[in-house]
Image 1 (spheres, rainbow, N blue to C red):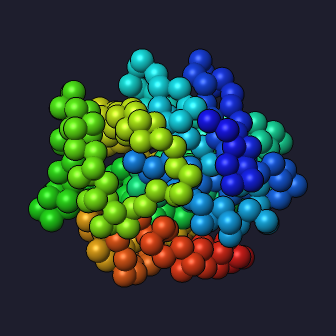
Image 2 (image 1 turned 180 degrees about the vertical axis):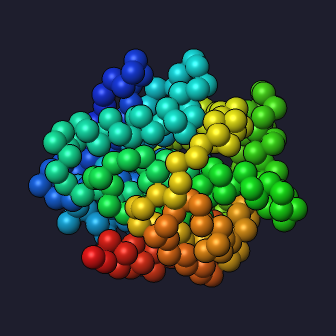
Length: 285
């Protein structure tokens, strides 16, 4: 897979696995790190790349097992803690002295990874923007909510080995139609269907490892992060109940919650509005 949209494909061996990201190469600018969600690739951020590529070094990692990011044999490498190490190393490779500010944006499971960066003691991370996602502790508390439990049925389904993988291949067309109704749409130059299916199967392991990591999440007691966080949620998200500010009391001390009309893939459905919210947040002192 080559570069795309004026971005170059970069790869590095990170702890024994080939890891890939897209990069516009502007190493004299602040860094904008965009983390895609499940069933997506970095191309999901096409509208955000167009909006922010001029003023930032835009970095778009491929999730573990997606595109040129090598799938591991050990599913722990799909987990939030291991992915945090990958993202920190990508930042180090692109800004070795840590002198440039970093703005992180994550959607869906990419939002979980963005929260991990927010919680990590790292002064280079200036802001974190979360799109239709939840902090691990927040998500686990929500499992006591019947409404959220119903919306999260797929997390339980993904724990059954082989069955979901087979269904992704068999019911591909039906899945595409269902996702399109939620605002998902592949960019015009999205890779072949086979590549998409392989990425979907590999990335499913993120949810399996999330469940295995629950004891670690529950033991964490680092206190709320001081990193400014913008949490954008959609009223009609099929997978998440919109949050309240109170949910973040022990997670983030400087959080702004915005609930807007829209569906799960809000950054594709309403790119201009989302880009404006992100730009305004980044410009705040």
